[in-house]
Length: 265
Ligand SMILES: Nc1ncnc2c1ncn2[C@@H]1O[C@H](COP(=O)(O)OP(=O)(O)O)[C@@H](O)[C@H]1O
Ligand SMILES: [Mg+2]
Image 1 (tube, rainbow, N blue to C red):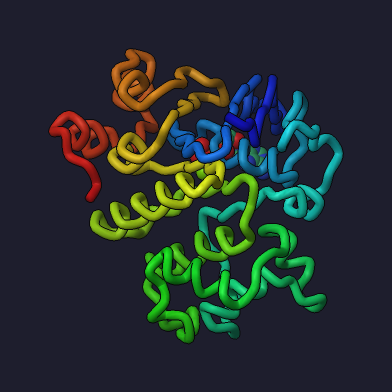
Image 2: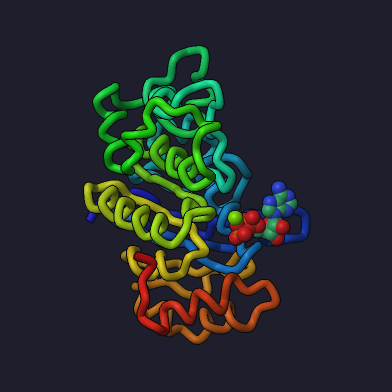
């Protein structure tokens, strides 16, 4: 196994708030790792830190090289791609063009493209990614013609088109219905199986428990559990974090769903 991402003692403080507190996470090549936890647990901040958007203490290594001091575009060039909780697409470009901007990085959009990933690929690669995410029929559509769910998928496709070393997805299934989210899960599993290390943040416990190799659970910035889905779902601290907290994340549906043995397909 080749380690792609390794963080040790990664911490982010906002004033007195420890948004991320001594977090160790490893993602290997071909692995899909779920990062879950209640609202405000620090999931997005963790991704902001490794992609260079907030300052942190501790270490983050990509392919064995410390990322210390590198700004977002330099991290993107090393192979860190991310999506955002609210997907921003270029509204005057078609779906295909949105992917090509990310993949080819023409000078006039280089900064924007660098913020989301490194340049790679060509037209054929772009169309391959669109097919993979079943967006082929929407290639020539404008973002304004898409549903919220489709916009999300284009955001994921754009990150995948960069052929990143580590793909970080921040709630890609939010706004998708159960069928769409099951479909996305199948596609993410394929992307990981093809070798891409993937870090998946999502509230859909059915999705995360079904497709991930390992899950890391954050609460108040700290890792409270990590391991294979079967182990994590039975961990008393995890059950408490989801069922006992005032800010529990979809506790009812998430846990009823898994207890009923349902997946999000
Ligand atoms: N830019 C910021 N300034 C101050 N506090 C922040 C900022 N971003 C996030 N936080 C705080 O950090 C904590 C973790 O937030 P976040 O990473 O967004 O959680 P999650 O993605 O798990 O819901 C929360 O307490 C949140 O209020
Ligand atoms: Mg978040």
